[in-house]
Image (cartoon, rainbow, N blue to C red; front, side, top):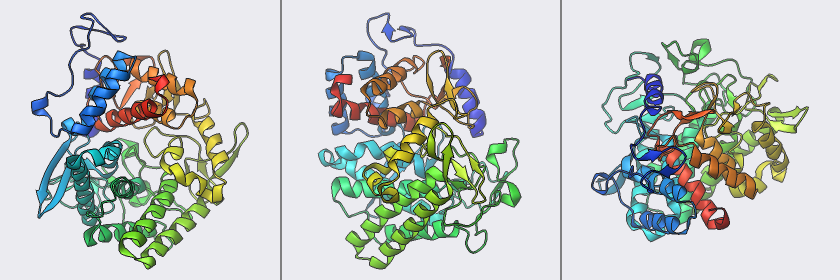
Length: 481
């Protein structure tokens, strides 16, 4: 079944029957919540550290429905999506996105990210995440332009007959997205920082990382359009790339072209700004690892030089003086002064920049980025963003991928993760609790007026990042839990 068709069908099915003893709104007729988590004997992986966190959270949370959601959502990646084994003495972990049997570089990184802080308490969990890093390197070396892969390297994709591109066996989809490669760097650096373990970072890993930098440089397009092109025989405009598969013209200026967004939708203008921001901080992290682990100063300097070039281009070409909000970042630009003012719920997005930049915010644009990003946040969470929807039950960001009036829980999570305001954070939590459609899990999207109308009943990234959010609030602002 094609992904678009699956999503539509999942939304229809999701609006159907509820669990028999469940009354929507968080009240169970049996004064309890239904068991919807995968049974222990069917779980793919069990982490003692994660189970201890669930027990602790449920005991401390005043909101029993929130505790139930955390128990269901936070371990969902481990319960249902991971396939771990040892290959040639190295851990190897294949991670599907949920309802689609393929591993996205982006999703797999984000799905296991919140578990990093638990690795020191759980050696097996640490090994599992090391296996994700090893598996990602295999995929990047196979094809750095692909976004999703199969475990079976000889499997032929369902898109083989419709996609006009260099489609290799074992590749599920070949949509070039900057963030796919950034996420692989982010996970490697996060693992290294959390554990101090250098084992995954061998010559194979370094080969993959150097290929990432090579690919970024190719897509700056200073020397022609580069080796990548993509077209698809489809009625969905957002699934194909115009102009012979190379996208609309972009004036080379140091920014990196991305033919697709993190939503897997085609960009309008090739310079996708949130992803270019993500590339800058990813290159900084990669430079640090190259020098500390390999003493490779030449590669570290190459990473830092590329980051500086992209960073300068962002603030030269992507800053717009909005009549209401002041200086903000555009979502996409083309280098010819055209820009697209919007945001999409998929991460990286403009809303997510404080989350992805983290401690590097103080370094970004020589410390001058914070006010611009703050103004951008106000724009994103306003009626000026065409994909900010406000309805009877919720408000939040969506995007073209699903369509109008469909809010993504990830956008509500990200709003909470990037806020320091207690009232706003509490409102995000309350909204997420009341919009799971009675299922006990997060979804890809739900209708602004009716949370029972949703897409994707099994979307592990949304579940895990929800768990990341409420665990962070519990640790930092427990009075809100």
